[in-house]
Amino acid sequence: MLDLAYSSAGDYIKIGIKILFIIIFWRLAISLLSRLIHNFFKFSPKLRMDEKKTNTLVGLSKSLLRYTIYIIMVISVLNVLNIPTESILATAGLGGLAIGFGAQNLVKDIISGFFILFEDQYAVGDYISIDDATGTVEDMGLRTTKIRSFKGDLHIIPNGDIKTVINHSRGNSTAIIDVAIAYETDINKATEILSSICNEYYEDNSDIVVEQPKVLGITNFGDSDVNLRIIAKTLPLNQWGVERGIRKKIKEAFQEGGIEVPYPKRIVNRT
Image (cartoon, rainbow, N blue to C red; front, side, top):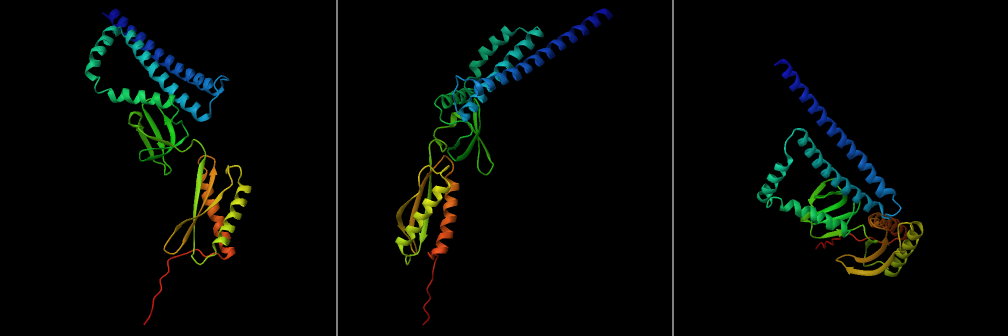
């Protein structure tokens, strides 16, 4: 009885060591293969891709790698425990019919994720809008896309729910500056000042402004003002900074040139 007990305990120890070895081995394999994937996409001369698309492919490849190795790890542990994996797989095949309807959304998300990747709709680092969520793509997985908004909120969107995507990072952006001046102001003088500002700003910021800003002219007549509009083509996602910079120069130039900025006025007649 004593020898049998020692033999049984020894078997348990051997099984535990084997399971521990399997877990450590595959964890190291995940780490090593993840580095190889990273280096392959980053430094392979045959893959000439921009950084955003490279980061997206690296993330998806690592995600696929982890899921595959976890399945292999579980099967290996079951074999060590002498649990027949064939019967489990057969049972899983039968049970798959029962849970198939519940897994439809999961399959839909994964398939949609692959289409998003292959069609290059967006990549990690792009600034996009999906329904009411607008922000920078922080992570793109097999099932979900994570978008970090300007305020810091993290939107996690299943890929299968993505119908329409607006990608603000593809192609040049347009800065639009509307300027209101009083009706009494000399339009020609105001337009001349604005044109001078456009020329000066372009000379100082040609690294982010791809075309010289233009004064389009009068776009609207308000109750107490006349609206002029300036447009400028910028590199992607630089339009907001350009708009702020031009508005600052307009304020300074109008103040120096005596151009009146309108504000609501009320005339009271006393009888």
